Length: 547
Image (cartoon, rainbow, N blue to C red; front, side, top):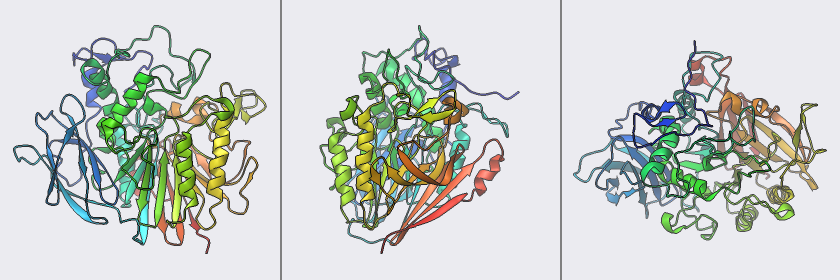
């Protein structure tokens, strides 16, 4: 009989998290939970005391998030070439540290090493390259895009074993296949953890949790220190550490947060709207990012005053809005649609007005050959859920999306903002209008010819669903919502690769005169595990710039 590690979301952490052997998340001891967070075995690299290591870069800076197998009482040191950078402790126990190196040479391969205060090496040295300076012209830039890599771990015993989140060992294997193509950067677009505190996905998607649900979190307390911090680590760590380990040590990572990263599903009832997110859960989202994955580095073309940017405790880093700039070849605009979403009816927005202005202004410039929008909420398709750009909702009798029935609590202003962004993207004369999204648990490509009154027929917008890494069977839209990724009524979409609910990822190559998209998928129901190591593109397309 197949066994699965599962968590009852309606019984979150009974008892005290301080007693490692006695505390429980659902029915499982905390120690057993933490075992789920064991890092993968590194391939040909001595991890030493490192549990996980995730870097990001721009042309002159490196930001590194690291956790260690045991707490460090003194600050460790990152050596970049001949420069030493003292670590900053990100938790209260000394397990999690960050290193922020500035003033580096652009486009250079730097040698990195980690040391304890006594000079003892904490892991083997490794290389990491900064990006080219903004005025350089590289020949190619390759980016790995994926989404939904979170979820508690599990077991796997063969074809058809699909009842829970994809086990972390398989998620890691999928990502290692992506890394085998040697991308210059990787974008993890949303849903890095799943531990919803008030709503959940499943047979009762969008409903409130059962009454009397217990939680060991003190919602009036600080996330850091005591049981709140221990509970947060026990829930989030096992969903991140074994998925990435140290495999991305030489590949810059860019993490966008989405709804579940704020410890909630985007659900709404007469009793509660999960967004805007409650204050404590906002602090949980910020703490998860602070411990496990890097924020976005500064960009001279991105305003410092955007929401959740240059926050006092993060210095000049941005939490929700970022940029990947690779010379003058490519720029990727990354934006979280959950952190600033509001419920203002016709004036509602997903992204703050100043963020929208930045996105529009960058799209109107011509200082890069290619420009890509990468929002956490997908363009091009709908699954009929509440927190989407589109008003479509599932007609239960017909089993199809409709706009004839109002979607409860959906905000008209969200669609208005969508169309303003589509207008800006579609008005690029020479660059490829391209949006690569997260969140929706599918992989596919479409060409948007119309969005409401916005006619894109002469220069259709290419919309990409980047592919989920860890989605559970109950997380796929066709299961949880009764319908898969579907074209909304507001759009005319030509589906180049009809979205499929398989695990996978997208590789994007930027060249001076074109963009090459390649999509990879693995079917857990029909393909053996070792097929992951041989994955080839199931769909590819070249998108040329206009001469």
